[in-house]
Length: 269
Ligand code: KIV
Image (cartoon, rainbow, N blue to C red):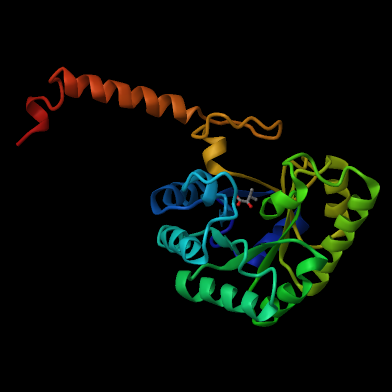
């Protein structure tokens, strides 16, 4: 499929929302995968702090550091020609002092040359969001299930099912839009709430487990490719079963090596 837009910017995403064109976003953490995804025509590549899980094997997103996020972002940036690259501000680098938050965002932008940052939360991080935006750094919001707060929630279950939390989410989304965020990720919330937020905002919403009535979708690439094996949330559609395919390829390789069938005559000098 030939992509419609040459180079994606925050303005392109807004225009896509206005035109009713859906935004396709996936995570990327390394050069090789980012190169494939960019060439395939993904609009946005997210250097997500899910790298903490799928790249480093941590149970949560909390341990990943700013320097580790920058390393992943640098690798992704080297690969892309078209996609907008957004980098997660990791846990502990923006939740407190807003000057510290700005310093973290500037470090990401300067050292990785990425295009934007993403931050989890609403009114709680308002000062940090405003300060970063006023420095000219584009911010993508993230509401609903915010994995950096997992120990506060105590569960990865659907958020904002109750009216009070749904109202707060809607208020937070409007606040982030008013500050100047260019888009908002809505994670694991009821589809009708995501649809309402999408309707009431002028900036695009990107859903993950938030139904179809949003402006775009995001998944963790390792999940949609089936590299992660034991993760089966209802919202996840697997497009490949790479875990099994890689395992089978590894078995064949081991067998060939053990049986002296690799390399053959043509595979040597
Ligand atoms: O870190 C991540 O991969 C994310 C997506 C799930 C939106 O934040």
